[in-house]
Image (cartoon, rainbow over all chains, first blue to last red; front, side, top):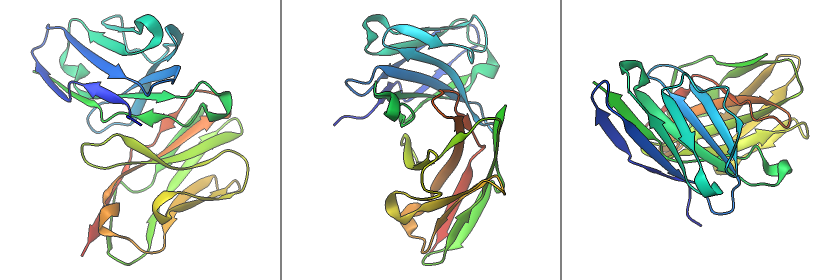
Length: 116
Length: 113
């Protein structure tokens, strides 16, 4: 079974540019999550999709971040325009639709974003 | 409110000796607790989870953790470290049936030959 995949693995962009991160969850996982780890800090929750709907986006830092999950399959996270403080590792995770398994989240390897 | 404190940012052990990674939590609700491990260039992998059943939880690769409500702790242990255990470990707390997962800062485990 393929795991959660993320693309790209690394991205280096200049301040003010736009970057789009992609996450492909495990097939059949309705729940999809985005997290971010800024250098030296904890991993922080950004948002949660159930299928194509945003269930909880309370962790999104500001309106420069836009997450989508059209069709309820893969998801994208766009940062526009990028700022220096956006640098970090962005993780995606997915979990099964069964509520009893809801917390067993499977994580991707992350995308390391560097804004210069 | 809920939070997690991992008491050591870095732990170094010799191969074959016991591992102890410490985690204290704070939660207003009956929590679920997890340990995840991240090897270099890999995603976070679930080691074990506590969800209000047995307080001693066994996970993969010989790891286990004990939920101690009186001490608000959920320390991760392994009797004998292996070189392949070298990685970063995260303690996570979440209210039951809620997506609000709070991660600790992580503990980097080094295993010396």
